[in-house]
Image (cartoon, rainbow, N blue to C red):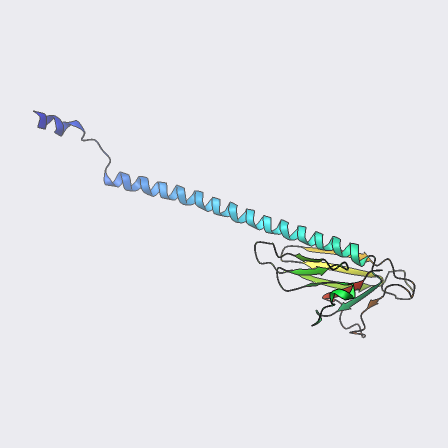
Length: 193
């Protein structure tokens, strides 16, 4: 009697096909959720890198504007010189050093590194372009256009060198290429009063 009761007790269960279909549907839903999560995560990282890069570019531009604006001499070079000014020279300089790094040594000898904390590799370039004022008759250069470019943005600013005008003050020396065959320089060196 007990044996008959056990046989009739629970014959209704899940078949192997039902379990397989349930697992397949669960796998598809899980894959869709993971795809959306991965896309969202990648979008967040990309936005974060773009934001960090723009903040660094603005910091660098502000530092250059503060220093170059009061320089008493400015020299532009096509490429970074093999030897940089020593600490005793009281000269500031700025250049890009490949991807993920820009170096700006202020005239007070403090060195700032930019873009080195950005979490993904980016290509950043810095160029310096001398410009004469539009209404100038003597063609004396007193404005330097600084352009910071990356894969995702370009930031450009004209920096007016205020101490130009008299022979006692600054000049932009581009004598390295006197025939104006080069229009963008990669290294700037300057002295403050």
